[in-house]
Structure formats: structure tokens, C-alpha cells
Image (cartoon, rainbow, N blue to C red; front, top):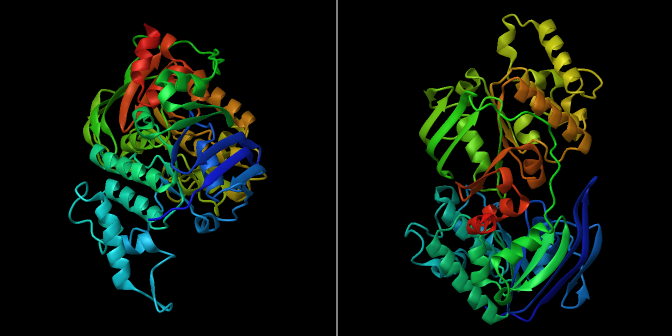
Length: 509
């Protein structure tokens, strides 16, 4: 695969999503034959900057130079035509299509310019699959449907899909997350070969050992701003983490509350929980406790909450209020006063074409008898709307008419109507305004006083530090650290999130 020289420079990139500033001043440079690591904590802007470079996101301000020429990509396809592509952790594969069809979709080899050359497609696919020979099962063949593949082989197909474009610049955004050590080793052998060919590579990874193994330079983002670069051979993990965190300052506590009494009853206990993603998770949360779940996104946090709620099969032991349970359906969890506020209100939390009333009562209608006591249902929904300071026209208005913050209140309120004893929160304040967050924090304080046990995943590190007395950090489906007291700092949270847990012990010593 011949490659011409390439240079890319992203200068002072700004990206806003409504009132949210995702990138305030993003800068990055990469040249042919170079591997640059793009580093930063949760919310630092890594993914946004990567998507600007590949044409997925249009910046509000800033300049993108390709080979010294100003460039604006209207789409990923426009970037691909100029040799820029990416491999993301979120796969873009179509499950019902074959490996070959996924890899070559949109740029199939053609016969006489009019029909797809199926023989060439299969041969070229096999050539790409041979790059990972010995690290995958023999069943991984061009004609295999993607739906039949395990997660690691799907990720490899995603990598080969990008490679089929013969890019000059490739971004690997957490592309090793699903791969085993042998597959990662093979990928990095390929990266070394790409460097020799003159390709430019940008790598985003939460694994520090991978950064030091493959990168030449690191560029660090913090709070949407590029804060510095480092030559990998001239730095160490501690220096990079310090750049990501900045000067550590005390995070103001969002809630003032009494600590959980030492004799508080245990509401939930997990022992050695395994699933397709979870790799032996054990934890306990007591009545009145707000237990935080942290770590970089996609490390098993959502799966953990869904396991508890009966939405994902698991092995291991789970006890609720001292009784062994094994929920196989969310309905069973709901019957035991467990509630889950999902992470995506649009697809998982609301029926957007239905009314506010119907959404409030979606999990609760059975409690109003037959025939339905609609007057009582309306009264309860109205009361919950008042308690949550919901701004709305009337209960019969479609929930789609609400602002993002008010829509999220409905998602939370429908579960609070059930008066849960264990509340599972999956990044509930993502994309909501500051006022709604403040109201939500006060709600959490009230629930704790009532004895509700809360397991709270947030992608906002500052939120976890400000709300929780104890935070469990997840990494690769495991709990990599438990932080509390003096150890609950931003530096240690980032360290535990990026396979540098030994730094925690060093700093505490």
C-alpha cells in the first residue's frame, strides 16, 4: 500500500453544541511516519477533535490544514477521498451483512465499471484478513455474517474496513478496547509498518502502556483546550496525568449531607459478577448511600447497571436486602423496588410522540387498577411535575415539546413515582443545563435522607468528586480502584481510569 506524504494541522478548533462548549481551543499536528497520542480525561474534547478531523463534526471556529492547505470537510466521505479515516470504538458495521460486504461497502471493486467484481471483493477481503492471521478463529471468513462474530473480531473487521480505503492518515479511537493482547500486538506491528509507509497515525487510548509502546508524541487536552505536548521517550505516566488534570484544586461539595451511618443496612451486594463485558465485579451499597461509578466511557459502567436491573444475563451472586436474587427481566427488578434511569432519554427513556402524562406513568399504569383510575394517575403525575419543578404546558402535551432538561425530569420522575429503594443512574445529567443539574443534586440529597440507595454512573469526573463519598473506578469491565477520603482526587480518578493505578499508591505514600 503506497502512501504519499501527509501533514495535518488542527489549529484553535472550537465546537459548540447549543450552550455546551465541547472544544474551546483544540490543536493537533501530525506528520507522515509519526504516531501521535491524543490524551485527556472524560469530557476533555478528544472525541470531538477526532470527529472534526474526519469530517463527522463541523467546527464553529478554527482552521484545519491538510498538506499546508486550508480544508473543510463536509462529510466523512469527503475526508476519506483525501486519505483521512478513523476506527472508533462504536462500530459502524451492519450485522446482517457479510464481512466482505461491510469492509467494501461504498467502494467495492467493479467489473467493467458497471457491476461489483465479487471475486475481487472476496480476494481483497482475504488479503486483509490475513493481516490478523493467527490471532482470530478460522471461521472468520469473507462470507461470514458480522452478526456471528465475537466482539474482538468485529473490531478487527472495523479496522480492516478503514484500512481498505488505503488512508494516508488514520485515527485509532479506542480501537484496542475489544482486542486481546495477541491482537493488540499484531495491530501495533501493523502500525509500525504504516509508519514506514509514511502514514500518519493518531491514537486515542485509555491504556497508558499502549501509549508508551506505540506513540512518538502525546498531545493533551484538558477541559476542551490543548494544554501541551510531550515526546514519549522524554516523559512518564505521572507527568502525562498531571497535564491531563492540571493543578489539583479542592472540588466544592455539591451536597451537604451526613455520612451514611456505620450500621446502615446493606441494600445491594454483588460478588464476582461476570457478563459478556463484566469481568468479576464485586461491590456493596447501603441504604442512604450515593455510590459513584467512574472511569472512561465504555468500560462496563452501563452494563453493570443493566445487569443489576435484569436486562443483561450474568453469573455470580447478587443479594438485595440480604436476599439472594437473580433478575432475568427488568420486570422482576421493578417488583423488588429497583429502578434504572437510562443514559439515552431519546431512545431508552421516553416515548417522544406520547404525552407527558403517558411517559410519567409508563412503568406505573398497573398500579391504577382496571378500569384505569386516570384521575389518580393525573394527580400523581401533576404532583411529581411540581416536585421536580417541571416547566410544561399541560400533561397532555407531547413530551417532545419539552426542553432537554425538562424531558430528563420526566425520565427520572416516572421512576420516582414507584418510590424505589435502589436507584440506578446511568449518566443522568448528560446534556442538561446547570439549573436542572442543581435541582437534580438536591433531589439526590432528599432521596438519601429517605434511605434510598443510589448507584450513580457519571461521565463527568467533577460531578463524581463533588457528589460522592466513595467512587468505584471501572476499567475493562473490572473495578480498578475504590477512592474515598483523601484518595478521592481528580488525579487519582484519572490515574485509575488509565491503567496507572500504581500511581495512586505512589502519590499516597
